[in-house]
Length: 118
Image (tube, rainbow, N blue to C red; front, side, top):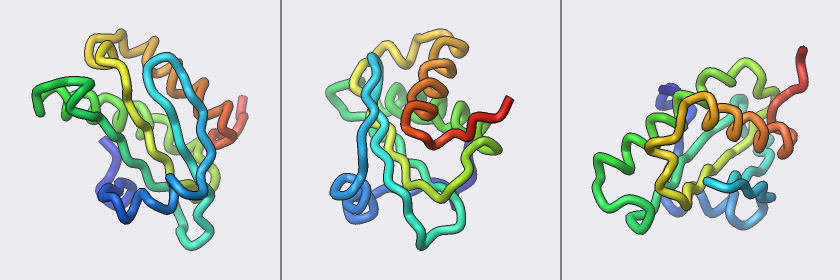
């Protein structure tokens, strides 16, 4: 799980990203991101609607899984981005960790958020 200082939520906090961000869409979730020069580090929010999963337990599990995947990629995030992962498919809760991790990596690279270190 990423640290609290790297997470953000609430409509007013997300408004900046929704208004000025760009989007990369995948089969399970989309990533909306914006460079935030007022910050030193990146911030991440994971949005899971009640339409995706009815129980709070399931929605929180999806959030925790995605936060953990991004935490493992943290050294490769090179600029202070505000990132919003919006989940729109309920299979994220049961998807294999490797497949889900590869999907997150692919979309973050496509967005230019991850540095391409070998």
